[in-house]
Image (cartoon, rainbow, N blue to C red):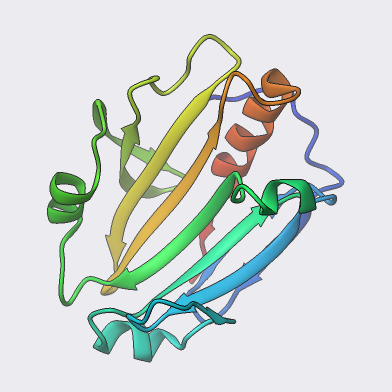
Length: 171
């Protein structure tokens, strides 16, 4: 993704040892973790990596955003699910109406970058991106979006890009 002049020195770092990743996010954002076991209602908290690896409908979502964005959905997040029952290519083909697809490397991890019809960047005021890859039996999806109608959208695009750029798999 792109580099920008967003100062991330005062951002918090979310580190998850169970799944082996970290990501930085603004100190005013909150983290919300919910999981699914295939039922209609989500469960607060994360499922174990072993549970996700061995169950078709299990997933955990890590959402990041402000209290205000919670009502309409957080603007960024990370979802993990099992690769045992699906593939990245299949998910891209069946689940998304993405206009642009490309393979990239982000912090040493090869992945697909998918862009919604507005493109990866609509000027400097809107984005809608999803990164997707498989590693060690887990399908990872990292997503974020800012509409051009949102308050302070130009700055929010920079913040979302910085969130993406800070994502790292940790061993």
